[in-house]
Image (cartoon, rainbow, N blue to C red; front, side, top):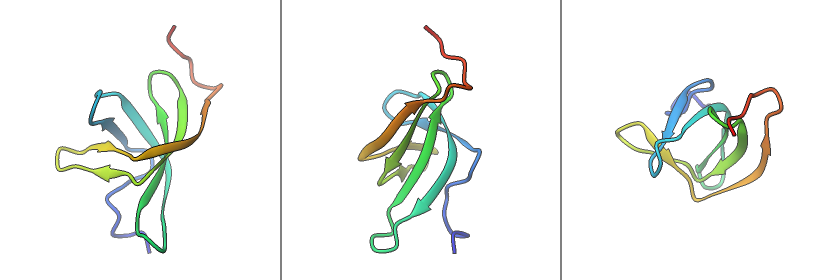
Length: 80
C-alpha cells in the first residue's frame, strides 16, 4: 500500500538546490529497495522527468540521485 508515502500526486515540491518548483504527476515505490521515484514536471518550463531515489526533507524540499526520460510537456507554455 502507498498510504504511508509522504509524496502526493498533484503536490508542488521545491528542489532543494535551486528552489525550482516541480509538480508530482505520479510516483511509485521500488519493492526491493523502498526507494521512491516520482514523475515530476517543472512548473516554469514544462520539462518532465522521472526522478529516482527521491529524498523529502523536513522543510518539504526534495532532491534525487538521477533522472531519466526527460521531455518537454507540449501542453505547458515555456518561458524563453
